[in-house]
Image (tube, rainbow, N blue to C red):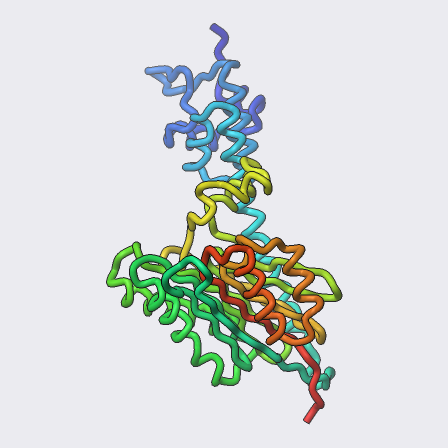
Length: 351
């Protein structure tokens, strides 16, 4: 059998001897032979493929514990795990990119340069739908706070109500732009505690939460679950939230097509809810003419985005848009509670 010294194996695999010794200690890449007298490690050419895979995964930034799991899989399954890992990296990077842009804007803003004043015109409506016996959604719209929560479980309605109620103080306080994300994060944490009290410590009851907090020039977003937020800008519709569902994760990993997702039996299975994960947080610049939509999945599951786009584009006011959206969901069968908040960013005269 051909033996490779640790130095030779390190060069061939592009791993340092120090890294190889660490991977031996962690049982990630064990040498084929260790000399009992000298303790020298020896490898075989057959181990190079695994070593190179470890090296590539480390260059991706994958943690060693997850690399061990990937290396134990068959190639197809390993590819799926790598795809899933990278989808998570891209999602986290997007959040950090938005935060970086927010900080750059804050640090380079010139006080008094822009005298244009903006405010929100808004409307919220929640409907039981045509099938469910009770409405477990809560929708709220105010001058500074927009929120939709979709409760589930035995106390779903109190849970969604408690979550939104915990945020409502934000609607009555002036929000400094500089710490808006911290303020919103703390408020969402309090909302989670309020839901835990309603749920009495069980996981059977919970809620999604999607909220926007207005600062006068930006909207800070907090999102967890499968309620959604959309932005209509210059005639184009953008979804600005990412569903925390099993089906969405399968879409991200390429294991499911958009068409298959529409009828998947686990379509409503949440990976995260308010009490079981950390929310996505980011900040969005606002522009005059922007129209925002927050909705529960009672709308998005039965009304295609193309129809949502048409209704948002043609409705003359938030009130009209909200009621057209809810009525369209009910005409599509109304299988779930449906809640919508629509807010327009409009210019006002400077004081």
